[in-house]
Length: 207
Image 1 (cartoon, helix red, strand yellow):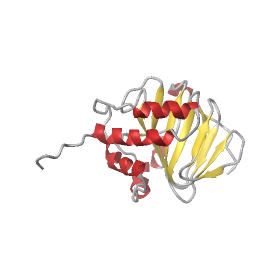
Image 2: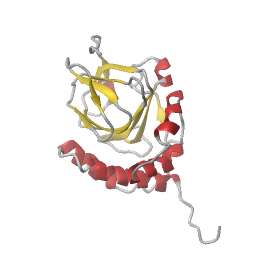
Image 3: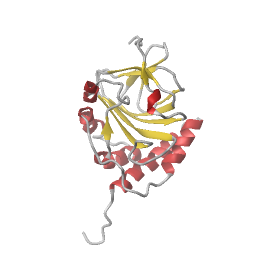
Image 4: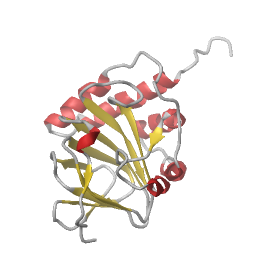
């Protein structure tokens, strides 16, 4: 239509990143401040990776069906542009792509390059136990939709509702368990963000 300026994938993702920046700014931590600052930077090039989905993404239409704030609305708008991949840097079995998937929107192997920070989304379908794992990076999650049970070190899993932040220190073992509903969360890594440090732990949290 005459007079309408086309909106690109970069524009849609920028709108989501800027909205996400304000959400992380609400958390009083150095990692949140670093993430918030990085998300404020406007991306000026097309994404390096095109939109792609995994079977686990089948939960997204329900998770995003009723956007209840500006952040959710902007995520819904750019959802088809996001590049989803298998979680775990090759350490998880290929079958997990049925129930678990991540995006890396910003980062060394992300849709937009960044050398010392990773930021993206994770979707975990209902009834899945993401096994105990650890990595050198410091990590901060923000839960967008769905209550999951989170465990760190040897503590029992505790429910974390939408709107919650979950912080993991470097090399702190942790796991996530979904039960009756799927979960969608934003995640960020800072510090030593090389995926080679990611490893699974043999002991399993009590759930």
